[in-house]
Image (tube, rainbow over all chains, first blue to last red):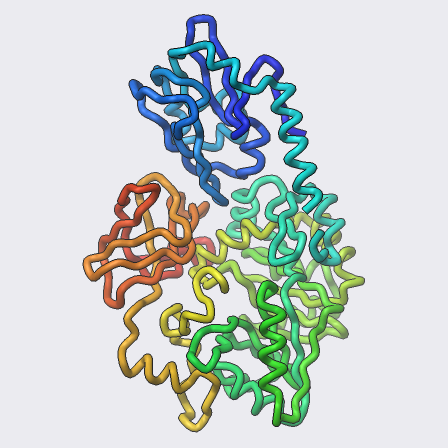
Length: 136
Length: 360
């Protein structure tokens, strides 16, 4: 079973968000998402200084199997990107919630956090997805 | 729920991720597609390909019938056991399927694709009219492909006895019957290896023995990256009924001599050849970051074309693709990835053979 840290928030499209004390937040993709994609071979990162809007595409992760957009969970400015992923995209597979973070954003509107899923809600969603697949 | 091969429970025991593949529940990987890929390039891996269709042909007219049905000529199979790669075309020269045909002690054996099984069988049945030939789908057989530089030795060691003796004398692209088994030195990876066709009831215990002796189970994901590196076509991606062998890099499989052999599709293919083939099948490599995929637009100095399948090459460390481009295009080109044009180089496949980079 995939790991879902309780202190994180999630998007239905499988991004996670870790809020820091300084008004910034880290963004990555969930353990469930990296497992579904398989071995990652390329991560297209946003650029530092980019302003992104919640719901927009902010990057792409590509595995040997497929490409998948990474959506922005929050509106704000990109203040850091995980450049280690340029040479080691597999960090997203091995440590999706740690060394495999993708970018860091300065939140323009922390109230947007309310629109995101809690760890529990996200766990329910992926369980439902699994049930749907089993019925096929 | 899809069809299951006799090895389904063995896959679950090895923690396979199962996906639907042409109506079959098949392993896509057992944890890491890249590690499975590398195992085949450097050591040995095995694939369950029991979903593929084995069709035996017998009868007094078996040979004459196959000479009409197939674009390559079974006359080339000078001795029992020898294998031939060929297209089966429709009257328009489009590819109904690609397949391998073996000459057996009596008759012939074909191995055709899984997703095309029903239409292939229907087409063959239709073409049998007027011939004293019979076809039989051997669905009681499973197929295990053991592939990699250590595959032949490892399989011989594990099977022992009569099998090892048979394997020791197998030349590349030949098969040999051992009791109810048929063992061939063939594959879809660009490495040395064997394909074991064996009774379904025996498949799981053989699979487990190979596993215990260090043969790594590999899923269809690794099978796809391996065949792409080897520059081998995949039916449904690189070719279909609208594409002729001349446009799919399969011109070498067309046996034009003797002229009196009028195989199905020959007239159309002769006309296409005489008029000049507008599209050529070739390879692309991309030095920059990103991954080539099927159905991306390609821009060359001679006009536009399309990738037919693409992937990140685990062996080379960059993206590769097979593509259909305007005939004569060479050198630099561009591929559209998510709205941006990325530079690529046109090369002649294969990309990798026996673990080494071989593209120009």
